[in-house]
Length: 161
Image 1 (cartoon, one colour):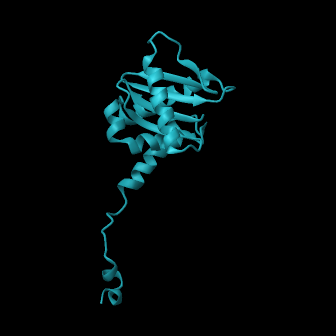
Image 2 (cartoon, helix red, strand yellow):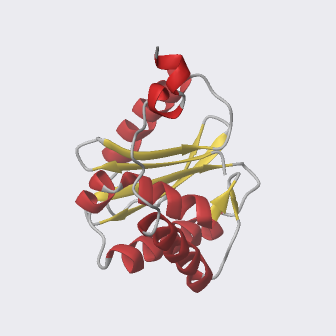
Image 3 (cartoon, one colour):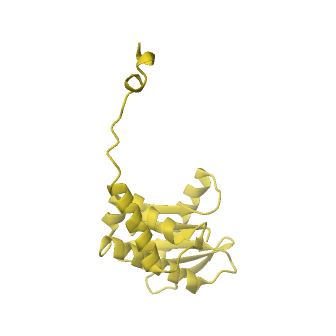
């Protein structure tokens, strides 16, 4: 997988994950072009399209489009399954996920994606294992002692004077 984009029906980008090195300018150009292309398609049209030298696979869930770019020789149906599995993971974690969950908890959405995909390849196929890893990370974050900011002079009194 080259990249994954999540965007709303209004064309607002909600999440982007790039697995190939591109300049910010190129990323913005690709994003703008793809969002316009996908949004212009009719609902009954195929969810696969050839674009540049890549294949684009997308699926709409409620108000969000999940869009992936894959190599020409990659399987579109597996990519659709990857999109669906990611949506299932988000749904399980957030309990009936919606666009606002992704907007206000984007770091969790990225974390779930990173637990599931690594370098554009599926890292873990088991939903249970992915959710367990996320749960453990949540527990670690929850039990971290409050980091009280200590000034340098408080740590090293000789520096403050």
